[in-house]
Amino acid sequence: MTQAISRAARTADLCLIGGGLVGLAVGIGLQRNGLNVAILDEGDVALRASRGNFGLVWVQGKGDTLPEYARVTRLSARLWPALAARLRERTGIDIELQQNGGLYLSLTEQEVADREAMLIRMRAAAGGDYPFRRLDLKQVREFIPEAGPEVAGATWCPEDGHLNPLKLLRALTEAFLKAGGRIANSGRASAISPLNPGFRISTPAGDWYCDKVVLSAGLGNRELAPQVGLDAPVSPNRGQVLIAERVRPFLHYPTGHVRQTDEGTLQIGDSKEDVGFDSGTTTDVMAQIARRATRMFPLLREVRMVRAWGALRVMTPDGYPLYEASDSHPGAYLVTCHSGVTLGALHEGPIADWIARDRTDLPLEVFHAKRFSL
Amino acid sequence: MPNASRFERLAARDDRWITVSVEGEPVKVRAGDNAATAVLAAGLRPSRTTAVSGAGRAPYCMMGVCFECLLEIDGVENVQGCMTPVRPGMEIRRQQGARHCENNDREEMSA
Image 1 (cartoon, rainbow over the protein chains, first blue to last red):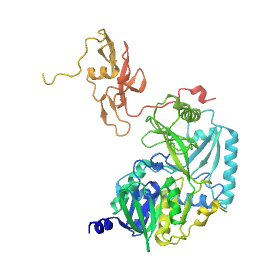
Image 2: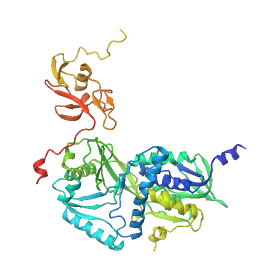
Image 3: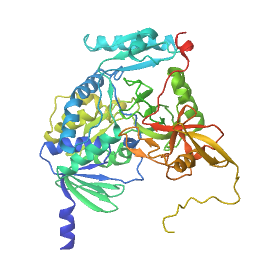
Image 4: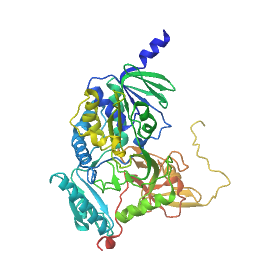
């Protein structure tokens, strides 16, 4: 009897393993499709990329070697305003979405030229529809008067933007719970067993039962995916971020390395380090980040740093996402990516619809893990 | 005296008195005091307003942790008052909201 009750309490139409930005966004999209959804979240020992990211909704340059990725990135950016409005309506939380364009500042002419060449190729791949401009320092200062004299130029894309990623995480969580979703801080899911039909998921807090299962566990997907006939070759890539005290607004557009939030905080990134599962910080990397930022914006020399952290990106060998349904275990899906903020609206929308309905117009074949074994 | 101040000066401290300025008014403090002590002694409340909502704040932890005692000291904004020893003639003002962040390198900017 007790067992029957506890089994009913741990049964859902669909379980997501992993409650970060990816799992939550897919989760509320599945609720929109009428599904009863539970999220099994590892807990605070997890690596938590969703609590350490930079908060850009970034378009320029993404997908330079994969036009389909450029397309889904831009689709997500276009879907963001409506999702931000719905989150605000349902939860009262303003995620501070701003999509007024962004600049990638460079300190060398060569880098500006290389980026322009890349964006010209991307524009051709997009059939001519790919808005961007190359800016010299004088033009950069029309956007950001405080740019320093060492800035060689920038590339500007009107589709870039940013948001507050912690407020987004909170808004998604509240929206999910308000719609009747359950979040179980159940510890690390250890085994996924196919039943007929459905799945049983073993966690330290008991077994869960569901018709469908979505792997949205970031770096944890590597071990989970083979249990349902999928492959998730993801590895950690560390980024360190500095946070400076709040100052009066001077930076009205996000840049690739420095952005200022609605509340005045400066977030300064970033590094790309291959250091395994170490999410710590190091003095030399923080110093490099600070040095680059103060060359771009000399006024930052006077500003105090108040915090720093490291977080681990979820990287595939080519940096592009994995969206794949299992052939051998129907009802099991893999959704993982590095850009959980930018792609959030794609995940809430078309990706959730694909999982709910088992059909999609998205070109998902290019995002299968099979691409790494061809 | 249940309402007596709990801020008692210890006998071992430097007992010279010096004068600092709090919002333009002279305030006498002990040489070993810090700027947050000075605003408390002056009864300056709030001693800052917050960066986002503009709510009033005053010194709290007095040990460099909470950042509630941010002040403008000798023209420099967002200084932790409790970590800043007083000096004769020190000019202490309220920190009003977020600090300004201005380029002091105008020549460099025009380079």
